[in-house]
Length: 76
Length: 406
Image (cartoon, rainbow over all chains, first blue to last red; front, side):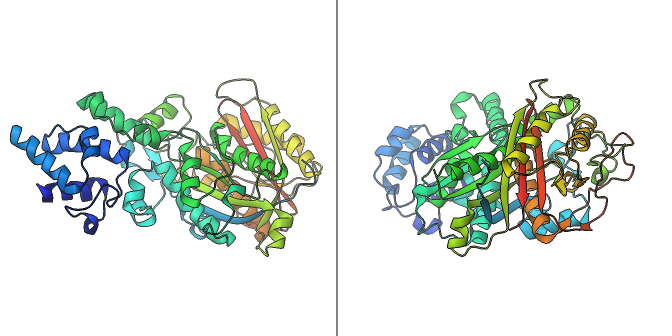
């Protein structure tokens, strides 16, 4: 799931690939609130996952976001 | 504001002639239009346009930055970087609070609007991008320039349709005259070649339908003109008070010595048939410059290649200016850059004055017998003390700049 998330960040939001590690925070990968809304939309349209932008904002790191994705993915 | 001398210390352009001042000037001097069939307009009533060739926003601005900018903002930032470098200003160390941004734009970001409208129709409003509004608002042009360059002084976008770029430069001049800024980044940008916007222009009969010969479609003042060819791009100028520019040892490319503005108060799209509105703006610009009707040697006309505009403007020039100035319309090459047109043409006029050279009016093969002014059909070398750059927009808004050499 991490690799899927990373390619979404790189391909759709043009985040530099070397910044994206499980420990990286939202600030580390330079995502602002508008990016997070876009990310929420993309997770839905690309992977069929329903995760709100508020939930993504509460995730401290990339790893936490991926954990959220895995949790939601397991439910569907 | 007679007595106020404003220097142009930097210029930058992104136009159908190319990305940069040098390729644009070369294209305009060549007299050959790059107008061509446009695949984006394949289903449109009119399918030709003047696109910027080789514009790669990811390479020029960085992919992450470019992703959040509509095309009209991308053009402006690229042109602004060129203008600032040309002016020799360091945005890292300047006093940003004394730097203003005044830019002209007609329609914001229709490309973003149309793309997101398709998303809404297909997937519903819940899939519309959060970037729709911040990308398409016209004022984002100046807002993004402020972010990019740390310009925290007065920041605004003016919208007077196809006079926007000229109006912006006039307002920038006023800000300098009122001492509200020491430096103003000004000009205009437009990226309006989208299927919906071009359908609108086609339906109102504004566009040339010479699809069999696109390069000959934009033909200002020619008897066979049948409308304009839409272009896209940006022109950016760095303005400073002349004394400030001289004090910092800047190269002065030219001077904005007068500005005039007016409204036709006549019709939503047709210019006043006698050119009365634009005449008021010309007279105001001359008065601002402290010049008389016989002092003008060159006019970069609005010259859209529409039957009505060119006739009204030519009659006005014949009646208003007594010095028989040499007139050109560079739209014969570039097409009509709409909200950017006035800014690009102001820069071309600065280059004309600086280089003592009037570029040709492309495609003028059968001059309209009803048009009795001196038009440059080929490149002409001549000294120019004073030139005018004219613009008029739908809504009947007119703006004129008086431009002199350094």
